Image (cartoon, rainbow, N blue to C red):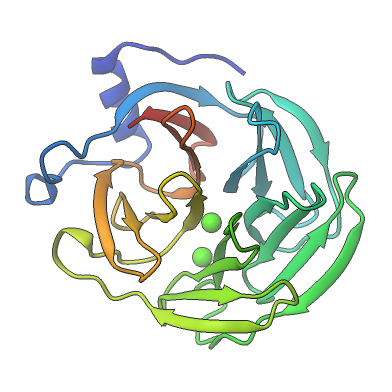
Length: 256
Ligand SMILES: [Ca+2]
Ligand SMILES: [Ca+2]
């Protein structure tokens, strides 16, 4: 792991190196900007989901490479633990505050797995979503820590937000078809913000984060400039948001 740079101009170049480019038509509303604080290389191939750990100190990510499982990271992107298990194509992860186990989503299999911190698979549950294309499946998972409900995003074809109960029964299926500044070509990751009681959704194709309320209305948008921004974790206590870039294996840290 190495810190790439803290210089804003160089950081702008690095974002472009991750495949990003800015589009003036996508300028966010005034006051809704993210300040990029740091970019770290992470020793994980194709990091595709991200979650804050219960301790508020560490992060977890998953690799979408078969069998690579999940990784605990410092907030500077250093791998603390690698926990491999029989994974296929992991795309999202969240820490369960009730028992500190992990929940991950398998994109192509359309499954939600509950996994211990040692990599023992406790359950594997199929999710009833349309499987029109294998790689347009489940991309992110988070938990509403106020209610215990899960939220899962289906990437596209169709773009869906699902709310599920503790038994993983689907309670709501919400098409995500925002337009204008809130439009998202795909849904790549999701993170619950318990301070504002909102959901942060990152779109890889649209290079933005859209924050939505519990009526599923978009309230804010942030431009990331990251292509292949595949995972997001919001830390509202410290007003930080973390994102992982699949293509370049990087961790981005922003203040908001
Ligand atoms: Ca995908
Ligand atoms: Ca993802």
